[in-house]
Length: 253
Image (cartoon, rainbow, N blue to C red; front, side, top):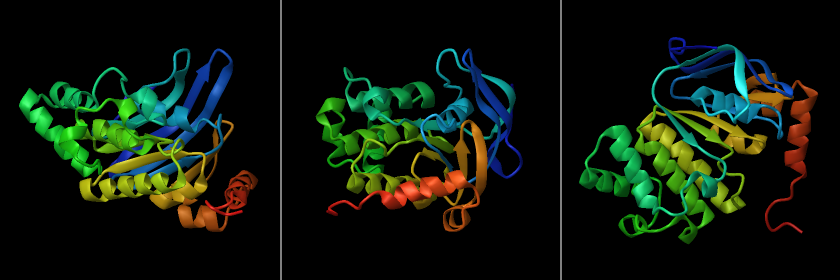
């Protein structure tokens, strides 16, 4: 596989990406364009290849899975927000120390500067009483607060591109909306590029301007969110939309 800079005006460009394991090909010739400063979604059911495509950009594929063809172009630093904050955070280390470690080892800060920066990052992602929360362990925080810490860890490296792998899946509807609003605010305030993976088209439509729909390792439809959601062309996209429409609202009988 070839790794290069992204195409002009883009933060990420993927061309003909193929990913395989011993069991066979998992992603088939996927191409993706992510203009700098935008939010692009990848949506599909479990096993569609969306998370593998995302993880290939940062080079974090599971053991036994590898890129076997295509090219990936990236311009700028990458940050990753994982689906499960419980597994992304070390349960034996305070959340403040985990943010400070990134500040010190990636950004070269002193311990004092790293602590000050960790407090600033906790404030930025909306963690209350940030100086006190630095001393908390992951299990002492709510699910929503843990996901905010994961965002703070990613931001500590001062990324240009934020890769989000189903970051709201384990959250209730209210907290999910708060995290989505936070991601959008961070994108605007920091000028970030966001690639957002989800199984839920409704979630993607709240954050992204364009979306690619994946099924069985292939992109079956791409376009603006308004077009894909408002006038889907592929039967699989319509199935995903029907699934969203069938989910009752919180509090509904």
